[in-house]
Image 1 (tube, chains in turn blue, yellow):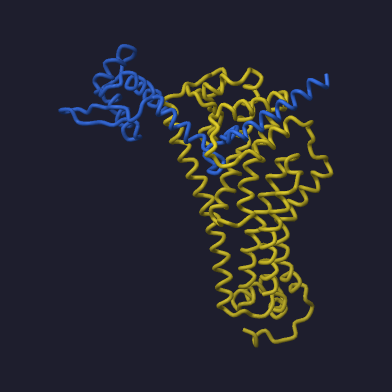
Image 2 (cartoon, rainbow over the protein chains, first blue to last red):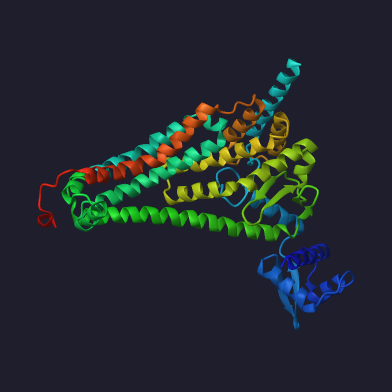
Length: 124
Length: 320
């Protein structure tokens, strides 16, 4: 299971950097230069990625051609956007070190920190 | 009836004035773990009082009273006298419905919140695995991204996640305290406290005690983790880490206000450490225990009095 997860990341790495519709065969040929893999393994991985909504596909003869739904940067941005919403929509999904704040609130934090630093400096 | 009325009145006070008083109290910040326990106790106490009020309404009805009298070896008449006049089977049914409804709804929404969070977390982790790399030196996942963020995926995932921008914004000492903060969350299973409070808030929207409890517990577990982080690090350095990450987290005017809580954490780290003294701690712990025990005591005291009642003036068969 863990190995399949690693393989998903490797496959996405290829598909994202090629940035064109790709068949299972093309990905397999590329990955085989590094390690021995079965066609069905790569097919399963790409099918999983399709089910997770990361790849779209369209039929091309007897096989599918896969394309990433978003770019790598967009995928990361969406993921981090979901991870870091504001204070209001807090759930138990994940625990953040600091919430995203308003600019004036961040400025107030900075002011408190700087004032404390000056105080510390003056005490010495 | 009287017991039910007392319990219902207590629940109303605890859920409003009690919550307002605890929110104004300054001591939870000086003992965050006890603070979390106090909010949980106040929440449980409010729910429990309503549930027991419902059950108390059912006590004077024939079936319940006869069974209870036998169980306690108490006089049926005395028992009924203690719980007030017979409300009739209808009132009894209403009481049981309220008790079952409140218990069921609270349980269902807490379970749903925790299960939903676990599901979203697994999905997030699966999508994260496509772009993050595991840094074995940090023991964390690093995501290449220009917005600073540090968070953990608790529960089964047990994963600390940092963006590359967060790594760039922190020096080594700050990084160590940030990692210690996240590990404190994972070790303490803080997500369960947040999940339960959020579930209760969803179960009974608009009730002050649950709204405040969810907010305050979320803030207090952060302070708890901050305390763990500064056990081996400089307090000012950890405060600077929080500010650096807040600055790098793409601040936006469109967001809901969250500053007071973040500011309270930073100020708390910058001020000299003032943990609550032993006596105050003991007092706070006592409050926690009393909050949970009080509704139970109110509910069962009349039954105990009835069980002690030395005489039974009427023929039992005449009553049933």
